[in-house]
Image (cartoon, rainbow, N blue to C red; front, side, top):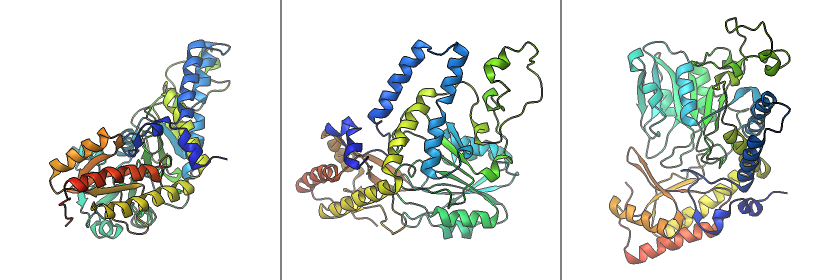
Length: 409
C-alpha cells in the first residue's frame, strides 16, 4: 500500500536537495519518467499492425490521464479535457463564454498576471475588469458579493492565491455565482494535487490547472473542467477533426473510404473534449500526467491535504521561533500547502537570504502581488519534517548573523 515514505522514494531529488518549491515547477516521479521512456521506445518502433493503428493507439493513451483527473476532482470524464496549461484553459474560457458588450468581470488584486490577461485583451468589446481588493491578504466572498451589480457577468479567481497561499471559499463563491446567475471561472493550479477539491459538491463553470506544479508533471499537459450543464452552450474558437464523433469503423476505415469529402455537416462531440485542439496531441505530456496523478490518487487527496497542512503548521511554528514574520493568514478553512513569510524589511536583504538558501540546496521562491508576499514555501506530499528543519536551520543561521527587522503592518 502506498504511503508517504514510499512516495518520497519516487523523487530521487529529495536525497540531494531540500525541494520545497512545488508551487513553482515541481519535479516528476520516477513512474512518470519511466512511462515517458517506454513511450519513446514505442514511438520509435511502431509495433501496431499499421501506422494508422499506431496513431489511434497513441490517441487512446491519453484516456488514462482523463480518468485519473476525473477521479481526483470527482467529476465526470466527459467534463474533462486535456490542454496545454492553465494559460491555455483561461484563454478557452475567455474566448468560449459569450459575454455581452459592457460586461464586468470581478478579479482579486492578488491574482497572478495571467488570470486577467485574456479578459484584459477584450477591452475593445467593452469588457471591463473590476478589481476586488484583499483585506490583509484575505480574499473574501463577501467583498465579491458587494461588488456585484447588473453589469457583472463573471468572477475569475484563483482558488489558492500564489503570493500568500490563501484558499478561497469556493463552495460559498459557487453558491453566490449560481444565485446571481453569473459565470465562475477558476484557476486551480495551486490547489489541485495539494488540497482536496471535490467538484461534485461545488458549483463551478470552468476550472483549469496545468500539470507542472502540484500535479508533479512538468511536461506541457494539464486539464480543463467544464461543467456538464454548460458544455452544450459554449462554442470553442478552434475546431479539430479529432473532436468529431468517431466515424463508423474508426478513422483508419474512414480515411480509406473513396466517397469521403472534406466539406459536409460535421457532428462534434458534446463533451469537454470539444475544447481540445483536436489534432495530434501532446502524448508524452498526457502519459506523464496520468502517472503522476495516479500516485496522488493512490495516496488519497484527503491524506495529502492533511499531510501538507500538518507540515505547514510545523513550519509556521518554526518560523515564529526563528523570528520570521508570517504573511500567510492561517485562518481555519483557508489553509493551503503554501506558507509565505518575510525575514527582512529590506527586499535586497531578503533576496540575499533567498540566494543563500539556494546555495545550501534549500529550494523555495520569492513571490509578490499588490505588496503582499515574501519567501514562499511549498509543502507537498514528498516532503517531511526533516525538509522543514533544514530550512529552519538556515534561517536560524541568518537570524544569528543579523536580527530580522521586518515588521508586518
